[in-house]
Image (cartoon, rainbow, N blue to C red; front, side, top):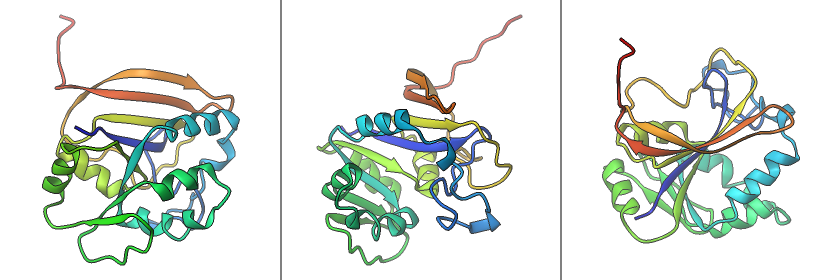
Length: 201
């Protein structure tokens, strides 16, 4: 079985939209694109290098794929580009897609069923980067095994959020955490099952 791991940059109020640049995703009039950039430091870079050093394939939503596909193949001297370009890219889309990035495969139709089949097959972990709409589908179908979050010390007020109404409740345990010099909390969580409740009475 393959683990599905969601790697996400998120604000204190849960926004994950357009972390990397002002024109990355302006949907809904979002005007804070690039909000992670002032907080990036060497420690975040080292953590990302470690997270990308293990074998993985990519599971991406169509919008994220369209952002990544023209960019990463051109970054010849980047270690991230090397592993992204080598990985198989499974691209979730409701329609046809012109998948020009090498090693790309389309997932369409009954997306949840096809991702379940992929998950229970053979291969390395499936990393999800960006892909806000796809993440909701995964959470609605209990398909997320781990969350690798980088929580930035900023409140954005509006924008696409990592967790929205309609996802299934689930319990997670913290498996590792650190705080970078710029104040970013890096926290990895592993799913443990159903939510348990109790009482203080």
